[in-house]
Image 1 (cartoon, rainbow, N blue to C red):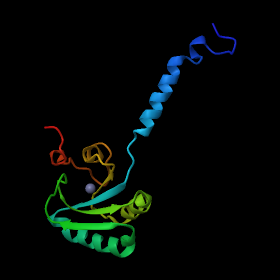
Image 2 (image 1 turned 45 degrees about the vertical axis):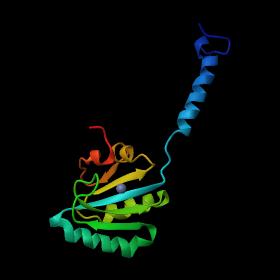
Image 3 (image 1 turned 90 degrees about the vertical axis):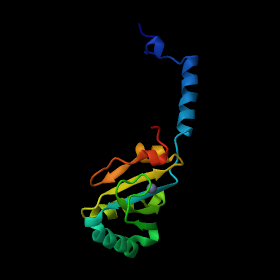
Image 4 (image 1 turned 60 degrees about the vertical axis):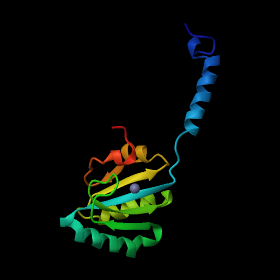
Length: 144
Ligand code: ZN
């Protein structure tokens, strides 16, 4: 049976609804904010020269939009391949994804945000161009 407002009686406002709204507001405020992004360009011995060439081109064409990291010819941290890091502000994300989409060639790129929770940022919030790889999450404090 419908109430006089045409809705089912159970759909009318109830004191418990207010508590639910408050909880939802709290959950929204707890959403982590993204302070910056990293793009890690992956390579290995056979793609080392292509990775270096891409790095030079990144610096020449969009270098003012980002901070370039070191060129690691070995796996470092959670990264299972050789890699270098490109760090940038959230406002640059669209430009940098577009640029790397067009210019990465056969190199794979791992994107992750930085929110202050490194494990979640690498494990749960990652994006890839090309192939994805299992990361060494133990390096980020993942439970064994
Ligand atoms: Zn990173």
